[in-house]
Image (tube, rainbow, N blue to C red; front, side, top):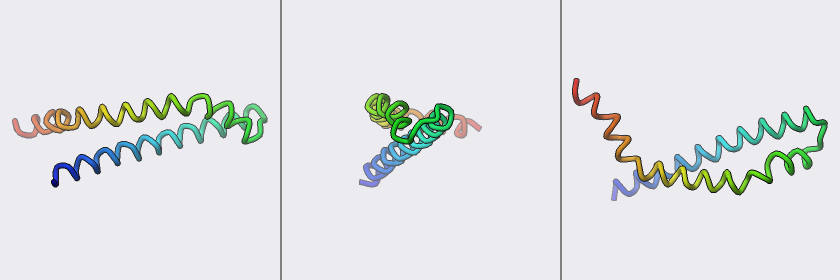
Length: 85
């Protein structure tokens, strides 16, 4: 049960981190486009966010699932050098 809770927390952390990264990247891109292109917020969002939102969301879902798949391998890889010394 504890292992399952750790896995759920890990997935949640990965998803939240990915969403936060998307917000930062989109926020910077939309703000830059608005300022550089003298656009309204609505126009900047339509150009810089909407065309990419579905694809980036799919990539985030795939990345979280890959992180879940590799979680144990990554942990073992990181722990091995410490066990040798």
